[in-house]
Image (cartoon, rainbow, N blue to C red; front, side, top):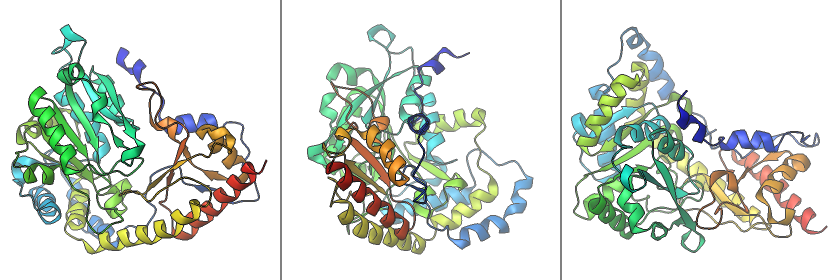
Length: 406
């Protein structure tokens, strides 16, 4: 067996099942889960209709590079959303959701032998982070290095924690903007820094932008390609990854795309041709319909805005929590007088007493630079309908008040 598999950490939800072992949730309350970031708003009917209408296309093997119509739709969306023109033939590659592409990209760009004489290849990640980044690094033969979030900067990653010697060994940088779990958006000045580091050391930047269409202020989040253009830079060693899962409420469709550096995408396509990752052709045509329609996205965003405007102030009665820049999570601090400030104890006791599931923040991060930046916080995914999220918030407030009064 591949010995690198032994480096993989249990996934957060596997750890959560272990944490909840033996817990009997209160039968007085129906179960409500804020634990998993799986969109629950209804999927648009026209996407389902497009799937049905093009089902006959499944009679043929699809090309790994994707249908020209889908690549054109993705490029057209990037043009409308970010004002960036792409060549659909060379700068866009459809993928089966951003998750598998985030993983397989590392297998394409990492050379585990290149830095063997100075400690080995490095992949730099934010911390907390999406665990696929870490697993992709290990299975590509690299070592993940973490930049902890900075509470003073809305929990954006503090890249200054990575020293020059480590940047020199870096072959891939994962950026998540808007971020998971705190929703921070990378500003232009930070992109300038990251581009300068990439130009100096030659590493690829993978910008994970799957939450870009759920935001709470008038100005939409800045994208990496947009930042590069604004700074007068090309797309050298830069790719962005996005999907329809959050934007269009179709996580099971497994449809997204990667865009940016044509040279990187050429090699990525070669890898994917052998990897067997061509997208179902009926899914491709449904994706064309989704990327070409913006009204359902506007309506979806409005639902999240109304929900967060109602639920966030309610939770603020008992927790230190703020409206994020974007995404659909709340990143809340556990009060010191509730479960001793422990995120794991908070999650376990909340389930037992009020049948609400939240995810301990420490499960989304690693010990780095002397501490785990997720410890003492919980992530709440407000993906269900407003009434259910409001009920969960009311229970959380009651739980905190009862515990604090002990």
